[in-house]
Image (tube, rainbow, N blue to C red):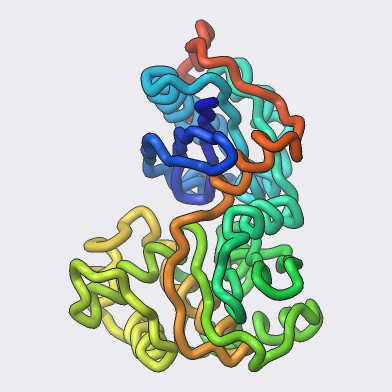
Amino acid sequence: MRYAVIDISASSLSLLVADINGELTVQFTDRETLSVLHYAEGRRLSERGIRKIAEGLKRLKGVAAKYGAEKCYVISTASVRNFENYEEVERALKEYAGVELNLLSGEEEAFCDLTANSGAPEKSLLVDIGGGSIEVCDPAGTGSSAFLDYGVIGLRRKFVRHTHPSVEEARRIKKYVKKSLEKLSFGTPGEYESALLLGPVDHAVAEMYADRFGLKGEEPVLEYDKLKKLRNFLVTSSKRSLLIVKIAPERMDTLVTSVVALCAVLKYYGIERAVRSPYGVKEGYLLLVAKGGREDKETPLVLAQAKPEEGENS
C-alpha cells in the first residue's frame, strides 16, 4: 500500500510518500520551508502562521494525491505541541486545510526514530536535535530511547539574547545540555563508537560541515574535532551568516544553537564520529502505522473547500 505523511516541524513542512510491503520504499519527497518561529507571538502561534501552515499543507496534500497515496497522515511534535494555543491550531488546520493533526509526544517521536533505524550498526547512538526536543536512541543495543523535553527553540529562549549565541551563551548551553543528559541517565559515556544523525536540523549541520571542510559531493563523516572547529567558527566569526544563508537560510535563527547542542551531546557520550541516517520520524511513523502499531487520524486527500480569511495581521 502507498502511504503519505506530512510532518510539521519547526522550520518546514515535509512530505514523504512511500510504499510499504513489509519494507518501506520511498516514492517521493517534498518540502516547503516555513519557520514556525517567525510566526510565534510569545508562546502562541499567530493567525497568520496558522494560515501559512494551512496553505502549505493543502499544497502537499495535492502532491500526495498526485503520487497515488492511498492513506495520508499529518503529524507534528513539539513544534506545535508546545504552543499554548495548540488546540486552536489543530481546529483551524482542520477547517482551513481539511487536516486531521496527530501530535506526537517526545516518547512517541523517539520511538519512531528507533523504529526507522532498527538495522543500525552496533554501538551506534541515534541523535535527533529537534526544535522542541532532543532524542537519543540505542537501536542495536538495548533498543531503548529517551528524550530531553526541550530542543533548539527552548535553548534559544532560555540562553540566547540575539540571533546567534555568544561565546558565554554557548558555554552555558553546553553546560545545561550536559547536566540534562546526566539527569536523563540514558546510556553510558564511552559505550558508543559512532552517532547517527536524524532529522532536518542534523542534516543541515552535516551539509554545512561538508561545505566548510571541502567535502562537496561526498556523504560526510563528521569528526568531532572538526565539528568543534565549525562550532567555534559559527559562534565567533562575523562571516557565519554567509555560510548559513548558503546552506540553510531558513535556519538562520537556530542553526548555530543546533551545532552547539550537537557538540554537547557527542562530547557527553565520548563519540568521535557521526554520519547522517536517511531514516527518521516520518519513516518510522509510517512503518508503525502500516504494522498496526498506531491508530491515528487519517487526513482525506480531498482539498478542503474552506479558505482562511485574510485578517488584519496578514
